[in-house]
Amino acid sequence: MATPSTQTINRRSMRLDAQELRKDFPIFQRTVRGGQRLIYLDSGATSQKPRVVIEEESNFYSLTNAAVHRGAHQLAEEATDAYEGARQIVADFLGAKLDEIIFTKNATESLNLLAYAFSNSEPSGRFHLKKQDRIVVTEMEHHANLIPWQQLAKRSGATLAWFSIDGQGRLDLSNIEEVITVNTKVVALTHQSNVLGTINPLTAIVKRAHEVGAIVILDACQSAPHLEIDVATLGVDFLAFSGHKSLGPTGVGVLWGRVDLLEQLPPFLYGGSMIETVTMAESTWAPPPRRFEAGVPNMAQAVGLGAALNYLNKIGLSRIHEHEMELTEQLLLGLSENSDVEIFGPNNLEMRGEVVSFGLANIHPHDLGQYLDSRGIAVRTGHHCAWPLNRRLGVNATTRASLYLYNDSLDIDALIEGVRGAQLYFGAR
Amino acid sequence: MHLDNLYQEVILDHYKRPEYKGLGHDFQIAVHHVNPSCGDEITLHLRLDNNSLLQLTWDGVGCSISMASASVMAGLLNGKTIDQGQPILDAFLALMQSKGADAGDEEILDDAVAFSGVSKFPARIKCALLAWMAYKDAALQVQGISGARENV
Ligand SMILES: Cc1ncc(COP(=O)(O)O)c(C=O)c1O
Image (cartoon, rainbow over all chains, first blue to last red; front, top):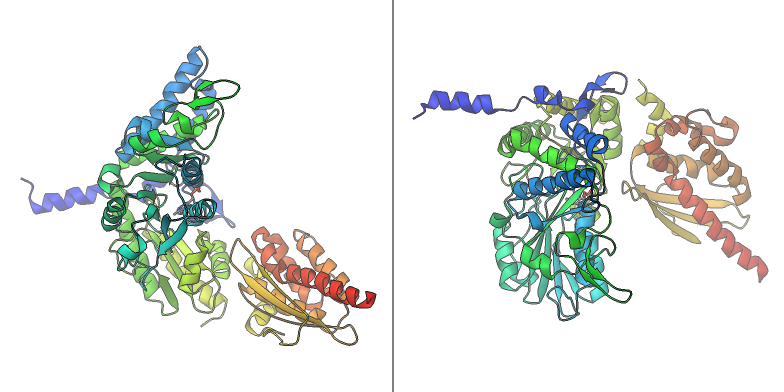
């Protein structure tokens, strides 16, 4: 049995050394704005890429490039192995089955794929929506998980309803039975808010949704890169996330769906690779996942994503999360010491992630962001593609810092100092 | 510090003490423009008085660049005819497209030459243009109204 002291040592040796990790990411070799160190606090928009990912994508083109699932030659075989190998890595990453993983171009496409596939459903089908039906979302959705459902509601005549948020930026579930009514067919929500950082509790929502026979769709864009996910434990029916926020290349996203549901789901994009038989008048569809991957897919990007997830697995998501939460605590504390700062979202660490949005008295986020940029600090400013949430918060824009494994406490210090610097610069004090 | 190119004193002054801010009740045209990438918003109220001179008020929320630009613009255009306003509008648009190469003609643009630095910050050009684009829209509409009146 380990004594407490060796346990402490073990835990300490498990800590991430972000400075060391940054050496894996070529971009941190460059400087910005006149030779300053890059302090990248915008991973919620897109993450930086480790060398192994860039090389894996490049190697695909250099060594194995050929159209997957076609061709009778060695390259086609190797390309298919690499692409399907990446699918297996994604499946393992989510605790899913191989055939439940669909590669898309990004999470936005994953969610649109679902909404359009629902529209293509036969009136007798499981996914068909009609006038009496209801689609439920939340007030904190990214546009990518709001507009597809809003428009599906328009196309089908169904009603769009939503959960609102409380003063701490958490979902108000007090009226869960009035929101998720017996007519509800779809509940689509984010796992972690890309503005507030709130991690939404899923158990009650999934339970109520399944009670009324609704399908639960989870936008895991901000959670999958940071939290260990097991789809069976979550209990949701579909899940989307982005490759590019998970250290992977741009141009690849993931849609996971429960196999029994995917089998019943009609396609959204028609064309090559997604068919079983074709005549001039009729076609039938391949089984999932290929039914949903028409055309030559984003092979190099999928393979790059496989390398990214391997890299994350090697470090361990729980260590990454722990590291990020330490930094988040430092950031929340540092910001709250500044009386001109208003933090939007939970101000404690309970059920929240590494995204922190805030406002600064008398200084517009765009001006703050510009000032921070002049000090080498990259943050995001604006409505973060969640305009309705901004309205709910009563602001037009916020400044957002979002963290990842390569950030360290010096980055947080720089941000907190930078905010004070902006106050001096713009003379708001 | 290169940031000072962007945040010139004139700009910060207009941001803190904006001119013609607060919408006038007597107007012929109201336009509302937003910058969808950042959420900045502006409303312009515009009227041509009996001498066809522009009476322009505005309100909005946004960054210092977009709000100062609205204030400077209102100062430049108020009391001018639409025709007199046109070269000012043209000069400002040209300044914004100049990538920092143009210092701006002070005779035409007056305080608005302070925005020359903005053209070096591609992400901020839209901020500076928000009010001007709203004006461009409003001017076309008000001309439509007065054109229609003349035809009567
Ligand atoms: C919560 C959330 N959903 C969806 C998206 C869209 O992701 P993608 O860029 O992969 O389409 C984002 C990314 O900004 C996000 O933060």
